Length: 160
Image 1 (cartoon, rainbow, N blue to C red):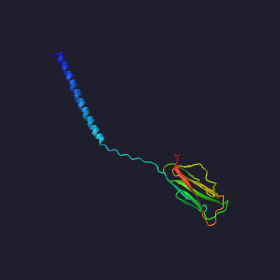
Image 2: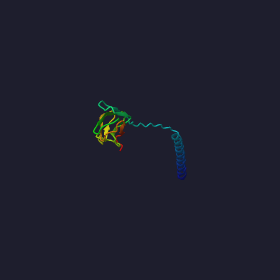
Image 3: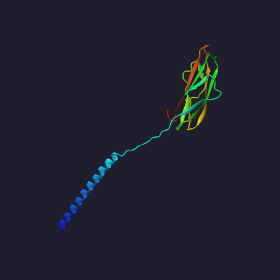
Image 4: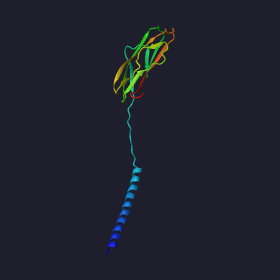
């Protein structure tokens, strides 16, 4: 056998082997793409929850009531200088830290003495006592109820 025919045989062998490998890899790639296209993936995301419990405490004036996170004061008539206090506890029942403060809307004939304006932060399971005190700055009309409401704002601790 000549050297030239040996080189041709090797070249043909290399070409055939390359084509077989190319076809084999193509078949594997196509098979993988069909398998991957039909592969279902199920994911579950778990987030925390924001939940707080607010309870009026002993010592709170009877004129105060609590509904949800709103403190409401209803008095039939009052004199200037009369003070009304609401004592409450707030407990973080959720799984993320919370912050809270009582807002001060338009007080009408009342002026707000408490609360402070700073947010109080509670971690999961923590609780805190708070007080809300207002004073009547003008006498209320006889026989007419004077109302005041304050909302206890509750937010996720890292929200503005």
